[in-house]
Every structure is written in C-alpha cells, then in structure tokens.
Length: 304
Image 1 (cartoon, rainbow, N blue to C red):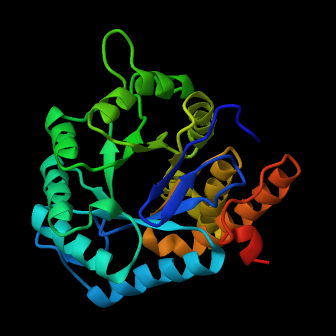
Image 2: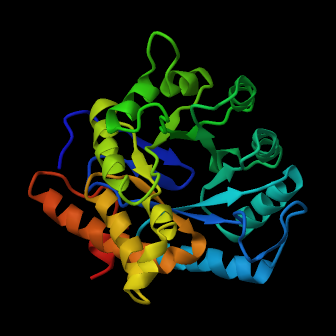
C-alpha cells in the first residue's frame, strides 16, 4: 500500500507518527486512570495505587523498547485535582507524550493550563476535538499554544466512512473539524476515525485509508475497545478475547493505521507483540515498492 498523497509525519516530543505504511512503526496508546480502573481509590481526589500504576507504565515502556513501537499514555481524569495528580505521576515515571482526556471540558482546560505552568506542554496531546467541541475549549487550546490534538471523526449523522470525511471537511452549514483545529493553531493533527462496535471496525479501517488518501494526516482508531465490549467473545474460550483484541489492531494496521489506542494499559502485552509483528510484515513488503523504514528502532530490525 502506497498513498499518492504526501503523508505528513509529526514529531510529538520524542515520538514520530505518520508517513507511508512501512516507514514508521505504529504508535500505541494505552489508557490509564479510566473510569472503573481498579488502581484508582478515589477518582475525584485522584488517589491511586502508585506502585501498581508504575508497574503498568513501566511494562508499557519496556515493551516499547523491546519491540520498537513508540507509545503514548492516555490519561483520563474525572476532576481537575485528579488529572493534575495523574499528569505529574505519568510525566515523572515515563519519558513519552501523554494525552489529556476527560469527559468534562473544564477538567481538560485546567490540565492544558497546568502543563504550560510546569513545562510539559510539548509532551501533551489534547483528546479530543470532536463534533461537540466548544468555543471555550478551542480558545483555551489556542491561548495556551497547544500544538497536538486527537481529532475525533465520529459523525453521528453519517456513520459511513464518507461521513467521517464530511465531518472533517465541513460543508456550507458548518465548519469542519480540521478548520476548527487549525483556527485553534493545532499543527499536529491525529485523526481518530472512531469505532462503535466490532462490526464497525471494517468501516473505521476504510475511513483510515480515506483520511490518509484525502488529507495525508496520521490516522488511527481504538478497535480493541470494541472487542472488550463484545460480551459473547467469552463463549469461545479463555484466550479468545486476547486473540480477537490483537486481531482488531492488526486489521487496522494492514489498512494503514499510524496510531492505535489499545484500550486499558494492562493490554500492553497483547498489543505490542502483535503490532510489532505486523509492522515488520508491512515494512518488509513495502521495501519491494521503494519504501524503507525511516528509523533504526523499527520492529523489522528488532523482533526477529
């Protein structure tokens, strides 16, 4: 697979994302402190089991080093107090970018302001600019000079791949998400094409190809979360969930995904080996078509 459109490569702190399939390894994003995460003791105060959190973060880092797949950490906070504690902890334990994530707009805005105050702005990615984004959010992003954001291309009015493109481009009635992001001075756009359930993974991966063909921006999704919501998978044996989870990630990679949310951070041991193997396969095939890995730390050179 080779896209005719020039493919953007963005550097977010120490992680490169984007490019033609085979040039860069897939960036893997694990989520921590999410609602219901058992290591969280008090989600409003941000109290958590620090030892268990560090173990999870270090395992993600270790697997990244072994495989060559870069990583980011998606930090979810329910309150302003909590997300600030989480950011401090993750930034201290790891040396990688992190995502600012919350269901509450004000929590994310407070976090954006905080990373500026403590000098972590270049490591921060806003998650996300969606169809529900508010002017206050965009103003805060622009004012605080945040450069990187996830653009969530979920179009509730048109769930087909073309609907995601329409949401990104806009129409005569409303501005597209890309225009809104650029007005907020977002320079590093990561397009999340949105997955609703397991069958919709097929639509999402088609949308990944469309995004890269149309805009050339790094694109990805969160297919593993859909597998975790698939209740009947447990009927097929003890390892079925993990096998299908890995398969969901591989499906997206084979269609050009540049980054993938692999769900709760505990699934790092499922995600990294499967994605590293797939990246190596893609890169080896791409060499025949004149595309070579752009980094020495690529799974093709690391895992065999």
